[in-house]
View 1 (cartoon, one colour):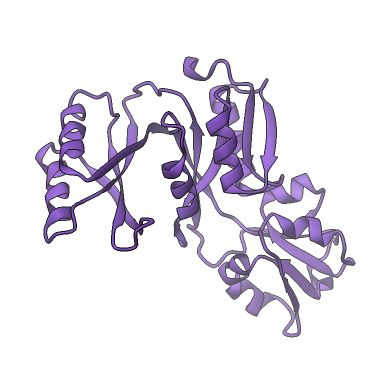
View 2: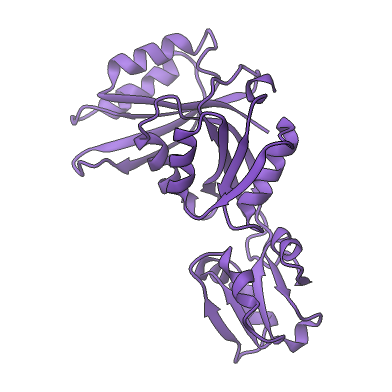
Length: 283
């Protein structure tokens, strides 16, 4: 799309081989960003900070998992950014299909697994039913670290990662799709300081807080109903003042749609705090 014509760099939560990189590849292909530099970064905060200070760059971050829920750090960093133009530009859903990967070529040779605790939990059934009872389990701080740590162990160790992880680190896939929940998926967002065009299949995310009195939130939700706007997701999180909560709401439509504009105007007037986090297409 034309609004992303002059992108110099695409940064993403790394390192390479992560599900975030898989999402980045989808965005790059969809928006034809092949000439942009591709840069992994270590933290969500560093990605948001870099994008906020580099108007010719865009970033890719996880925002929600169907099992774990909203990635609050991502949303918090965007809300707290001092760049008022920083917004969500697009969203993509990536299936989470964990694989057992190793330098070895035979699963029966495996006596140890290296993985993030969440990955271990998500593959618990496979580990209990398919792996040795005396399996040595080594936990890592991040899913992305597992493949790199695997290089320090002998051939009897395997890691839990994605197909992209195996491809990036030249590892063998001993068993694919080993997660217990076969419909597990994660949502990733593209962020940047750009105004998005209307596509006809957009979503908008807003953050707001209400007065601390009975019925305040109900009154706000009735505004969505009043304008016949479909609210697709709602969540809340504590603000810096623990007596107050920030409400996150997703709804169908673009902020510039003629049927959405008057609703947003009323939301702004009816809330104590309001911020548009982005109107974006789902690809």
